[in-house]
Image (cartoon, rainbow, N blue to C red; front, top):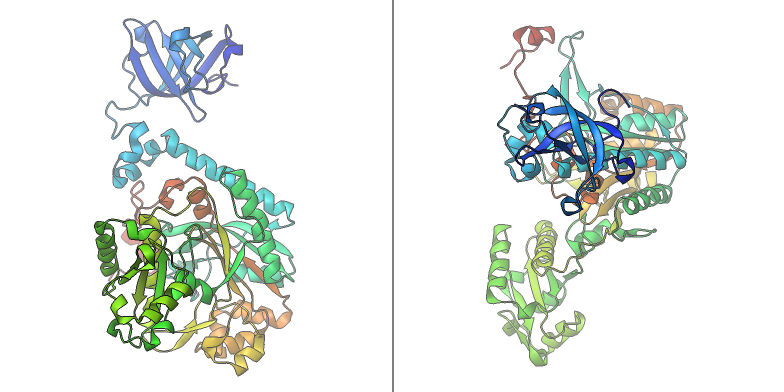
Length: 579
């Protein structure tokens, strides 16, 4: 290959025995067996054992130093074969070692144990953390998945096109990252929250199918499945396309990708379509984990004639947990503690005993006939427990969803050995802001309302549905998307309902609004999150594990020290004064 190596550290096999070889890599371990020194040499590809008989060749070389070792390949003694290594049947008997780079003697942590170290230490020494094969492999898998996605999109006839990083600020729901202009005093660029406007302009420009692995920037707080600052998505858009056309592409690409990089079963096309209203009622969330078999029942009508104060004039939800009645007393105490932690005033329940006898504090408020009706309506069985959630309309579904998830975890009934995909469809176009009472967009403001202009003119805004959709996998939102609004008259009316004037449109969305006056095709698209896909496929609980150089949960880059101070001269050049 070159003077540093003839082979990688995972390449030598028994067929190379007797041949000369040169390897380069990091010193993983050093073992001195009385004049015979064994070095495990590690590179990107794997590990090979190097044997030295001259201690002077390795004197003063600490672990993680980089060396080049040359010698002859030989078989290991049968009793020293290491079946954990792909190169475990051979070793390199080295007669020459060149130290390419010395490492300090004291490492901040053991490379192979880096995942057990505090996150701030891991991120400060991320270049060492990434040497851990377990961490290293996640980044390799990410690269392979990204390459696979590109290949699939090209096979489906999509062109990879790039959109600008420096753009204008727009009200898309999250905080922008602002970049001050040096040449234009007092004016700012923004980093794109998504390529939304640009990809729609590409459709107006006559391109038929666009995609890119797009960087997106949002000044949001971190979560386990959301990295602060920057994330990547498989952004794609299609001209002359309907919702089902987009779904067909997403189903093909996601199914093929998940089956290519995992042995777990994956939902086959067509993925389930669940209307938003049904998702909120049956699962208590618009990103349901369908591996959890528990469902939420609406019991409001059933309890309308039951004189039980906590349920009076409030919606009531119920969750039947099979075989839960046999759980210990502490199980129910812990569920109650969880309920109060999330803001509930309590967690009522009824257990089904032998002979279908119902037991619980609420039972005395139910006549024998109502008890029978309840058991029949919910198909209750012996040892089942029915949990109740009741609260204000705006809270009850979310609380019921959290109780459903917690029950699934505590009862250990979530099937973790499969990927369950679904589309959430028929999102409401508008919602009422709880603080201001004003009507605003619930999802993407550039979506086409179902019913188009007729719906906007003749319907209660809160009853208008949009051609908006999400893809959800195992309770994780992978993607949002929509059939876009491509008509300026509909766009103007839709924004008018949300409190925007034509002047606002011409100022805030001038390029798109103007372009739509010159002929725009119907178009639709979506943008599955690459980071979240990799997180699911590698089985990681935290998204930072699959990002090469992530920020911490406080949006800090501990490796390079960002955000950091800049000089007064830099501030003056961009006309900024710190207040």
